[in-house]
Picture (cartoon, rainbow, N blue to C red):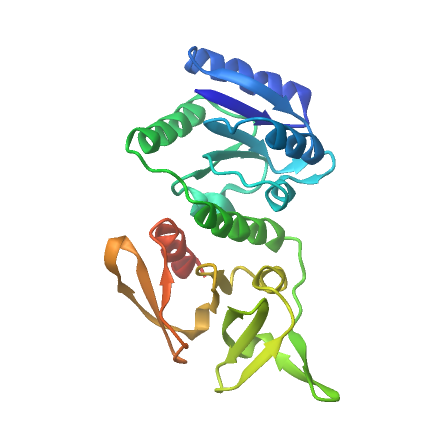
Length: 259
């Protein structure tokens, strides 16, 4: 197994590498990278490894910025000091986490989880990784971010205020955000769904898939869908089915009960 470590603290990187070699002597750490810039360059010039251990906060910014510049389609284990409670929802499929200092039993658990997935033939898809990373980044920022209470929606020669608490769901449409409200209105904002997600409290809003962000208070119930997916039934009828992929189903159910 070829492994890349992305960690800006030298001692932490050496400790993790030592534990990896103890638990998986056959594994090869092919690179230890310290920054977003260095990681992007490495991924552009080399084949993807089979596993990445990645710190969240690097010397030149959040490691999530890496994924804006390169397409990473391999399992990722985050190593972080961030609160365990907020990260439990991301123990699904290709994305896992380890709290610093990394304990050997937790590292062993991560290896087993990844190996079982690989042996089972499950290959992470880019869009599922993107959804999970988008939600993880939102959760990471939630504790220290003050979110706006309203938005200003352009309308002809004026702006119409919209309370965020009145949003039922948001649909991506032609690189814009189509906002559906609990009182039955529909408004369009010239922003991507990614940009909208950064303005919304992840404790109240969830990125269901590439096309939809949904509000907790607007969820009527949840139906089983084929291939272990979930269909979210809303109080306001959406233009099409809102389906949570099987790779995010556990995360979504936990988000629903943790609110």
